[in-house]
Amino acid sequence: MENLLVGVDGSEVSVRAARQALEMGKAFGAKVTILHVVAPIILPGDAPWASLERMQSAELARGQEVAQDVQRSLGSTDVAALVKVGPAADTIVEVASTLKDCMVVVGSTGKGAVKRLLVGSVADRVVHLSYSPVLVVR
Image 1 (cartoon, rainbow, N blue to C red):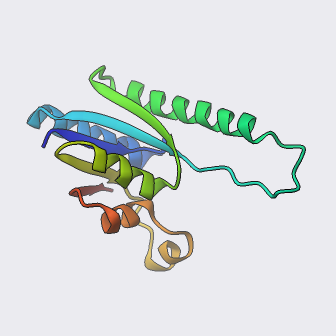
Image 2 (cartoon, rainbow, N blue to C red):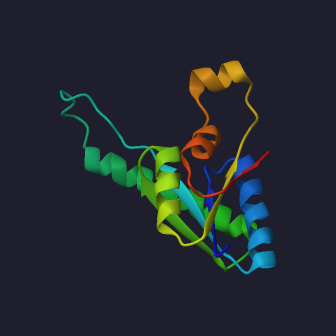
């Protein structure tokens, strides 16, 4: 395994997943990259008061802050950070497919079946979509 890609959203469980990936990276000599995905902004067509570019720019800046906070909390300079725009699970899988010999690491809050059905689960979707191995950390 050459690469570990960690999906992070700033939550405690995603930071725990990043820590796990960092430990694995050190043990296997793998490069660790954290990825924060910003959801695309969709506005109704008749919203002239909103500057889509300005809103997207603000969200990307917030995403950079989340990624940097996770980097700092890991206390390692060996961790790369990426911020992408798109649907979270699909974007994680897409980025993983561009990395050689990659394992994806994601956190999961352990939602029940009903809640997962109603609100979805990024970890669940990544497991189902990814061609790379996936480690789900709770």
